[in-house]
Length: 253
Image 1 (cartoon, one colour):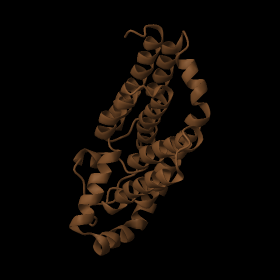
Image 2 (spheres, one colour):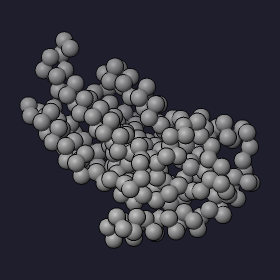
Image 3 (cartoon, one colour):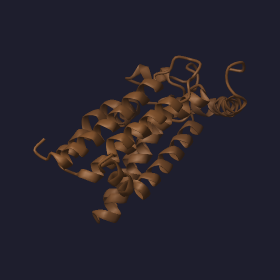
């Protein structure tokens, strides 16, 4: 890393790595004190609500049920969470908490091949919950109680990343920051962005954005699946808008 990365990347990596090492005794203590078979099952199952497979299965139904702009917005929040969290992981290249001494509890061993900072699950969860909360309270006028239930579920998923030994506190904090920033950007700009993408030259705009995104994404020194995930996610984002663009002009499709 010292020979390959720029001074800025080395500096950020050193900061995050030192913080992860500093947090190790706390992470070990959490597992030693609170770990039970029941909590293992709870956090493993809730963690599956923030992975690629869940969104792969769930997001299409928003479009099938005709939720239009909300569906496109939420899909983009999720897909670009994959891109931005993956880009940050590869740029900083900070390791996950060491195992051992912590025990990594997961049904998706591929996650352990990725770098640690930021937590992708946290990025997805915070981004999607903030975006959904905006629609619940500002557009749909849904009860605050339902929003609290949504946030409680999100908190369980985020807490599970630490309990399962897959992330440190700084990883989770980084994921929260990226997720919140992205949700805020999509809430503020989505109507404009949606109109732009559905305009006559919309697919060309989207293709240009994806080209810039994929050609500027950082490359890591180690083999990390983040680059492949980013390529897949942005490609699906292009497909969503091309499909919506075609449907607006050829509704029989």
